[in-house]
Image (cartoon, rainbow, N blue to C red; front, side, top):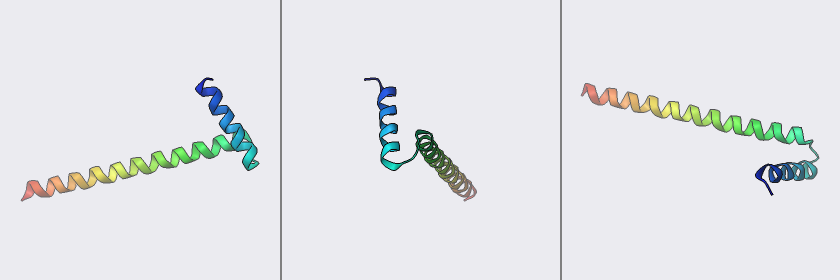
Length: 61
C-alpha cells in the first residue's frame, strides 16, 4: 500500500470519526502545520536576535 493511499485512508477514518468532511480535516491539519511552522520561525528569530545581542555585548566588553 502506497503512502498516499494510507494517508487518504487515515483522513477518511478521521473524517468518519469526527463527522467532518475530508476537506475540513485537511484544512485543520494544514492550519495546525502552518501555526507550528510560524511559531518555529518566530522562535528561531528570537533565538538569533538574542544571540546577536549577546555577541554584541561581549564584543563591547
